[in-house]
Length: 280
Image (cartoon, helix red, strand yellow):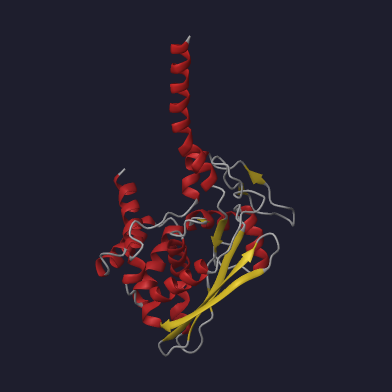
């Protein structure tokens, strides 16, 4: 009898040991979900159009840098683009505050980050960002950074640092905010004829990891790489081609970025993914 009791106690201890990681994962999933939308080009002067092609790149790199903040979960840009396509908003990717709130709720986010960038055409740029509370629709912690246009990555990392440093976000009721490792945002069909959009089943738990942006293996690359405007536009164009499913063109453009900046992990990660798919 004592032997059986001792064996049962041992089995319970082993089971509890294996249960701890699962419990920790569930608790980690209680982190608030944040979505970052494309930034508006507010540049002025004769060279304004030169900066039209940077919006996607700024959005992607801000998401990438913010992903290192372990207190939040960032909606992956590719997943956001899928929802924008479903909603008929993929052409510009830029949304007003009301639309940001609506899309944020579709994505299961509790907070959204929007903003814009301005270049004066004389070598100076300003990037602004603001966080929107999905529940109250209030704007919190507005931020602004300025610097040299030809070091746009430094501006992005500065904004990311300011946003993260002043981000006091708490989970809220609703999709994505519960401490459930199996929960995932639902996909929503576009609204038609003024009728509310319908929802389809959420992705399975095994695919949930694809919904959230992954932190860089070497986050310092964002601070040590000086990305010039021309390369930033190439990187942004590569992302746009990727969104359009033009994988061959996207791979070519990512390759150009990697050749100029061999240590730039965001471009290398996308290139590796595309190369892997092409080989299958």
